[in-house]
Image (cartoon, rainbow, N blue to C red; front, top):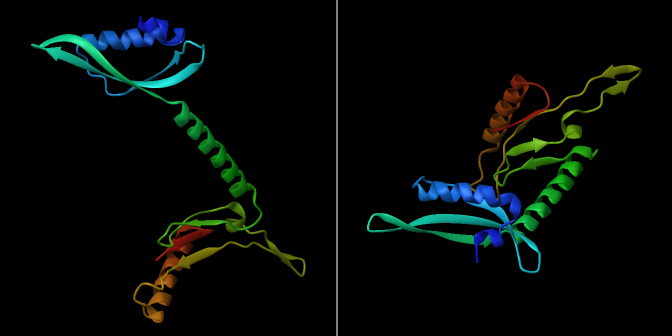
Length: 171
């Protein structure tokens, strides 16, 4: 069987080019992603990694290993779809959404959390912004002094104000 019998026609030149480079002794770091055609006509995405086979300082063959990318591509598509849904929820929600890591550090917040609507009191419009100085403590850790927590959160608050409106700074 010739490799041209199974490689999708649109990839044949690319495969031949890489094979020639490998035969010339050029190093190829990245795996090649192509499509092959099974006997039943099904197109299968694969990734190929090749290595030269050298005997007596002479190239005698090029060895390749291929892996089927079908499941990987499906998982990637599912991940992208989930990410689109999350981004839509995050950006369109009228509720405040904050994202923080496991150490309690704020990483992001959506627009409603950052850009509050102005308040109107007795016909006078007052713009509203939020700057937060945050410090966290966990039950499983030694409990810090409440005065120390207050001082640290206060310093973080002033850092947030110095850096602009609508910010969260973590102490």
